Image (cartoon, rainbow, N blue to C red; front, side, top):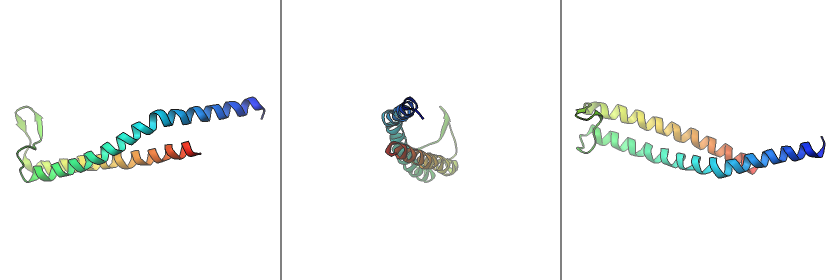
Length: 102
C-alpha cells in the first residue's frame, strides 16, 4: 500500500470515531438510562394499577378505561419491552466505546 491509501484509511477511521463520540455516545447513553428508569416506573405502575391506585389507569381514549385486571399484564409487558431496549442499547453502547478505544 502506498501512503495515500493508508492516510485515507486512517482518516475514515478517525471520522467514524469522531461521529461516534459526538453523536452516538450521548444519544445511546441517554436512551440506556431512560429505558432503565422507565422500565422500573412501568413495573411500579403495573403493580399500583393492579391494586387499584386511583391515579393510574389504562385509557384507550377519553372516557373508556380498560379493566384493572389488565393493568398488570400490560404494564409487565411494557416493562419487559423497555428492559429489552435497555439491554440491547447498552450492548450497542459498549461496542461503540470499544470502537472508539481501538
